[in-house]
Image 1 (cartoon, rainbow, N blue to C red):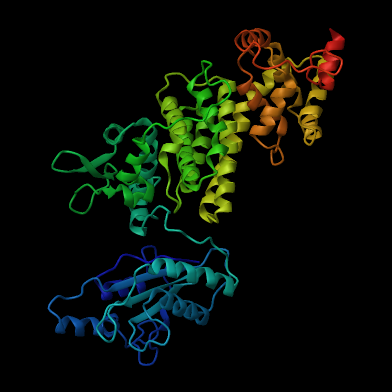
Image 2 (image 1 turned 180 degrees about the horizontal axis):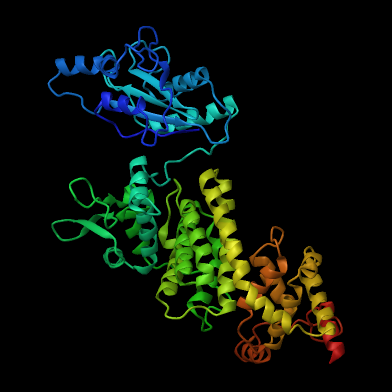
Length: 571
């Protein structure tokens, strides 16, 4: 059940005309009052042919008129309007039930606290099966104004209780970090002008798309203007940027003036101070990753950055920063991905936007690696090769799963749900990104003898998941990846262990596919010459560490896996 409190109005009679009218598309039928502050003697134009809207409006406005006659400054923002709508799948609610629900809503809002005989006047009008409209005039009988601060939160909590008590669809509790929903007027305007999205949604998508392209607030404003967004800026006497508002070209008011929305009104995390904090955060020390010093593309750097996500979740402020920056990296990936993946990645980025923000303050400096990778990607002139793209998208799947679990642990219901939606889109994109690589790898899978040896590596390295991996349709392709890595000097057993440690396999739909993208990324470079490295260490550290020997006086050797023993036997 959704109760959407509207901005304060000024015209009681005008709102009544809408509630008792036919609606914009003749959708209103049988309008009538189902509950009110006092039903006895209340004129109801829907049930009494002699009652008029003007009479009802004057009746509701009496405390307002009395106050205005006694005080010099008149009250004008006195019309409180709250539609309350059931979910499409909910059962039919009777007039009596809707009346009870309305009573609970006005009590929670502070319009009519329980047992208060001097509360505001209000009515609940029903003109459709699935919703009611509550109208109140916000001057009490004693002339005081009601305390409506945070009424939206209280009404939302009341709706969650109503859903439970009446057996209705249970919605998630809000936390005031969601983006503003488009108004009915904005939705009707978009429909009238042939726009696929109302202006606030259109602007939110373009503002989020601009963030990875900028390194400071001025660049951010310049990119917005270059991308076709109408921007109004507010500057201080020194010329410093203090704020901005964004508008959609062609979205004008009745006077033909451009309509612009402040960034904070479009979404809580799109205010200038919050964007500036993300863009201009200082560069912290990055987490080291295994092969960071090897030359790599921005796509490989992005995969490296995603590998560090789990290390940034121990502290809540760092976790929030990483999840916020993850959305920017996802947006950057969607912008530069091949056309056949772009739709799913854009849908994932749009869904994940809700998961980027919570009530927890973010320590933005902690997520510099993510934002640096996002900027490198959007500024690269060339797209990724197949294996690099598959590695990044696969890493994004796991990162979104990690984000969802963190939100679930913090009871962030809306954010966890948004991350789950993003995971579904990302998994589709990951399957599509990996398909050409799988076909190529499967076509040149090694001979059966090599497959048996590598199967032994799998059983030794990841025994708990070995049978699922060997039964995965992508096993033949994984064999090729392991053989290729071994040819570059890597140990398959070690690569498998590293990949399994980076991404747990219990929840993986296809564990062999997960291992393919991880091993292709971490094993893409030739392994270092271990003998040369050992000789160098021996020459620089001679005498500092005694050589460990076995009981028979021979130098100790590392244990061998069954697969390594088979390899020595073949040699």
